[in-house]
Image (tube, rainbow, N blue to C red; front, side):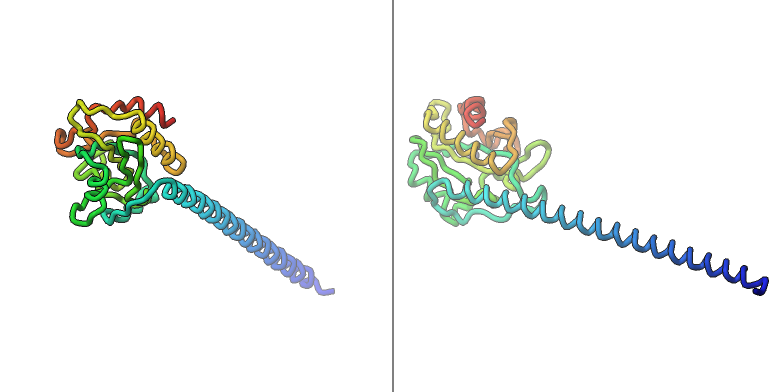
Length: 221
Ligand SMILES: [Zn+2]
């Protein structure tokens, strides 16, 4: 046995050990990558399942009321997943329910809310809740402009003269809509707002004058 054999043998062992260590490192990295991939996949699946649940809830809201389709709406911007987080209440300042449905659903008017509530509590839906209806105009809420992009608008039949009283049926119906919306959107009490308080410039709108917001909030919980 040559005296060099041992040295060569040791070198081989060291190389083998290094190769084995490299192999273990690579296996470790591959396992980590696999785990990361699985985590991403699981997160993606959870997100997709959450989105599917959300869509089903939105569809249920859109099926709850009678319809008079209006063309006066567009897509919500994708920010915040395109989901509404507030409700804007309006008074129509009109007399006839049928005429008001006509105005809100004809293309020339260029305006519509998502819902219209009659004196008797009848609710007609005009725009799908996931779409951006044209009801608030120039507006600002919590420092952010364009409230239409993030709101659901509800028009309530009322002359808006401060004397015409809102009916019990209207309070129940409006609160009922908000309650349904809360199955798919996060709408805290303070984000049930009047057109008057979000209109820009301030003072441009006064509706819905005389509506008891606390009552709407209480009934919609
Ligand atoms: Zn209004």
